[in-house]
Amino acid sequence: MLNIGGKTFKSRLLLGTGKFPDIQTQKAAVEISESEILTFAVRRMNIHETKEPHFLEELNLDKMSLLPNTAGAKTAEEAVRIARLARASGLCDMIKVEIIGCDKTLLPDPVETLKATEALVKEGFIVLPYTSDDVVQAKRLEEAGAHAVMPGGSPIGTGLGIVNPLNLRYIIEQANVPIIVDSGIGSPADAALAMELGSDAVLLNTAVSEAKDPVKMAEAMKLAVQAGRLGYEAGRMPKRNTASASSPVKGLSV
Amino acid sequence: MNLRINGENVHIPETITTVTMLVEHFKLKSPFVIVEHNHQIIERDLHAATRIADGDVIELVQFVGGG
Image (tube, rainbow over all chains, first blue to last red; front, side, top):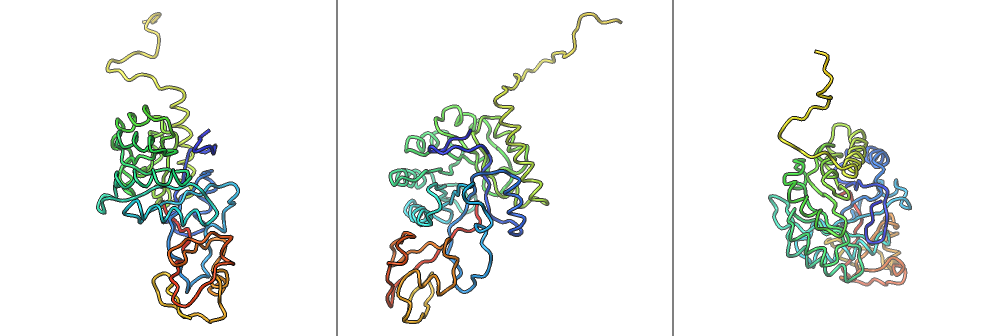
């Protein structure tokens, strides 16, 4: 079971809700993924056009935990404001701290992320900061009280997978809170690798929403996360540079 | 009265006096509306008791798809 800030979850796949072609596809993808945590952004309402259906209406909110993000924030102060707005919905007390520090790479600002994490932990939020795959920053965030730490596999929306598995392994080995690989996952193989390395969960969005068949990909990701976790728990064989026969070398009849 | 809503100047009838009435006026899906009134976030159970006046600055936000 995945345990974040006292809440437990069966699923180790967190799903983002951005960029889906339509609400029905999104709903079907969410259902088949069996995700229990969905991310959202907080944005102004269009007060002149309110007839559009809202995705939240389609969800069984009793079964789901909502993880709003602070996307759009450039400073800790802005992130804290967005987090407070999200909590005022009365729908959630978790927050994904996402403070972009570089518009080109969309990599997070470590200083502002740490400040926001400290402030939001003090305010009683369950805080999940998005961070680069920086081993020391992950430690700092944990010390600041983060309930889970979410290092990126590669930049947001690239689908490049896990570009530095060594860093990720270091982060996982040293962590005392769940590590959730967030951003950069492009394929089921990437998600399985994240889990095999020992991540507690994976958060992905574009890999599903931009797939040719988002619903099928959501199912593939669910299975990949399960397979990767099982493989991690099973403990893989060591890698070696010399061949070692699988069949007995004695008793050959030639 | 005139309000500043989501960065836009909006005129609404004088009969609207509370946040709840404002939300209903725009036919917003109230379970999902988050309100900030003059830079102060208003908890859901205080929407009905929060009075609005000419010149107020209001933000109406919601959850949208995001990663």
